[in-house]
Image 1: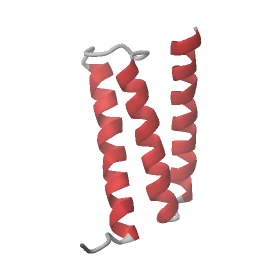
Image 2: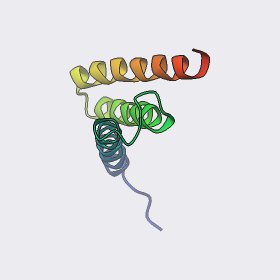
Image 3: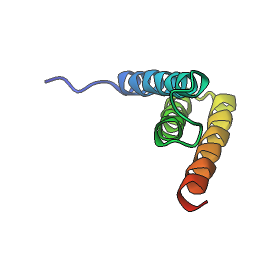
Image 4: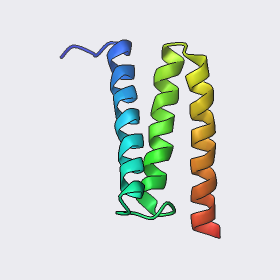
Length: 84
């Protein structure tokens, strides 16, 4: 079995990141979940991390910076949800 190229791995990560962030936004916007529920927080965290990986590979530093902030906000939300 052929090993996937780095480019393919990061393309998949970036695609997951985009889908995860859109699903999180849709869940909260349609009131299927509250902003502090597990799934929107989890999807924002993992989607942001996936975008960081993909955009670091592509050397898109502005987007990396944006997603570092996105992940920090998601971690803050997780902390508040867990510890009040």
